[in-house]
Image 1 (spheres, rainbow, N blue to C red):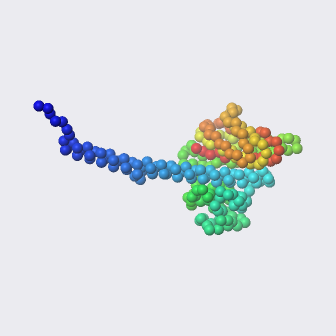
Image 2 (tube, rainbow, N blue to C red):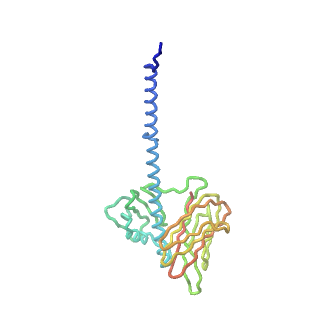
Image 3 (tube, rainbow, N blue to C red):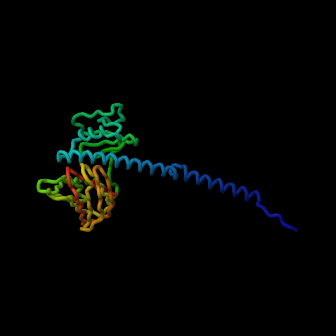
Length: 268
C-alpha cells in the first residue's frame, strides 16, 4: 500500500517557534538600542557633526586669512564675529550660550562667542584663541588615542610680490609634542618636522584674489601632492608620516595682489 508522507503537528509547532525566535532576533538586531538602524542613525549624526565642524573651522580660517592678507596680523575674536555675522550660512552670533532671539549680540572684547549654521542643529563656541571650544555645550577634546594629535597646527603661507620680486611667508605655529614648524621671511615654503608616527590630514584654504596658484606638498624631498587653488578654494590630502619625516609645503605662482594659504593639519 502507498504510504502518505507529511509533517507532524509537533514538527510544525517547532518550526513556528524557531521562526518566531529568528524574527525576534532580527527585529532586535535591526530596531534595538544597539541595532543596525540605531548605529546608522548615530553614524549619520556623527558625519553631520563633523561636516558642520569642518565648515565652521573653514570660516574661522578664512576670517584669519582675510585679515592677515590685508593687515599682516591675526584678527580679534570681535573681528571674526563680524565676519561671521555677514555670512549667509550663519544663523546667529552671540556671547550667550543659547539659541538667542537676537541674531547678533557681541561686545567689543568678547572672551568667547557662540554661533550656529542654518543647515545644522549644532551651536559652536569659539574662544579668544580663535579655536572651537565646545559643541552644544560639550567641551571639545581632540585626540583620544595615543598616536592621535591633541591639537591642530595652523600655519599660514601668506605670499605676495615685494619690490624685489621675492615671495614671503610668515605666521606659523605648532603642537610641539607632535611636530615643529619652521618658516623664514623671504621664503615661499613652510617646513614641518614630524616628531611621532601618525596619520594626518592636511587642509589648505586659499584667500586673497587673482589667478590660481600651485601648492606642492613634499615628504622627505619627494612630492606627494600638487594642488591648484583659486581664491577661497579648499583642498585636503591624507598622509601617513613617521617620526623624523620632514614635510615641505611650497607656494608658487603669485602674480598680482595679496594671496595667502591657511594650512590646518589634523590628526586622524
